[in-house]
Image 1 (cartoon, rainbow, N blue to C red):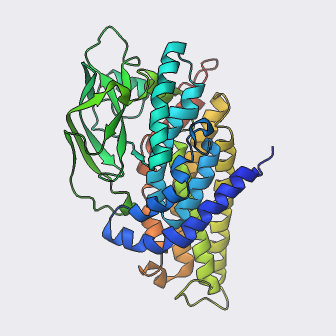
Image 2 (spheres, rainbow, N blue to C red):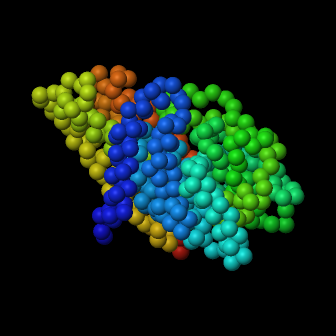
Image 3 (cartoon, rainbow, N blue to C red):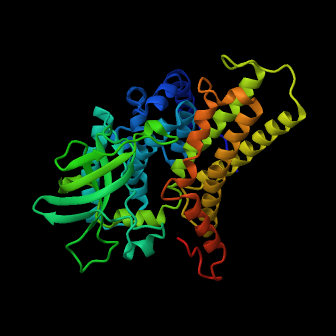
Length: 413
């Protein structure tokens, strides 16, 4: 197993690391304090070509796959975890339209139409620098999709009615990152007026402009962490989406949701980067390499044990994560699905434990806001509640899959 980065990956990782260190990190504290969206970070991402990171090369993008995206997102998170978390929404939309759709089996006529429609959407990203949000979370409703998707709440409470030239969409979304900031929102919905088709065939994935008539962002955003994601509620009231607004052909989003076993790990990359940065910050603090930190000439045994534990957890977490994302390009098997789940849970748990250890070994002054560790700890708390793979949901999938009757494969898939 060769885990070395390709030259292409190495170049992108180094470029992302420079952006994170030189641009994103100096702004992060103010953005967190004021709970405002990192528009300047996105200007930098646009200028660096990173908004087209996951746009296929044939459409003018960099053509990064899921593994490469995760490596880049890890570095971005080291500058500002909120920026990285919102960046995941945009890049996953590009991958759903691109490499994930390319691997999904669909009729040639449907594929040809998708190719025509996505070409224009990719062109906007490459030439105009637009970016997408992903309003997926909705109020918990019981229904057919609740059982099929096994995520604890219906994912398609948003309804779409077919009208001449497109759809009329109505729904309510929770925790919509990039609220009021993204140019477009990739919105799941279910077609309600074609009952002869199955729910899977009626799943839609639509491009909703930020300023479309009937779109409103409401509620305050004042959370404990990930404050610069600007994740307010989104209300869709009879919003018109033209037929050309299909991000994916009807039925494909539901199919990909069930089969793209590694896609939720895009969030993991953010929290891994956060843990890496917390560990490095703590070491710099102790060594006197962090501005304003006193450093220590000697470290007590209790502190040194905490440092060792922090490093051990980070290395174990990073190794499992890299192994899992390296398998994303392969046809999923029960083993690779389970490893993806295990890596995701390990990141969720250890992001909190590593940031907590980082603060503990640095001592009382680490809780001051002039140091970034208290922000890292607050941001890490979001890991366990991020849908679709919250800590509780993915843990349930792990034990259900492990206890599935022999011969039935991955029961939770």
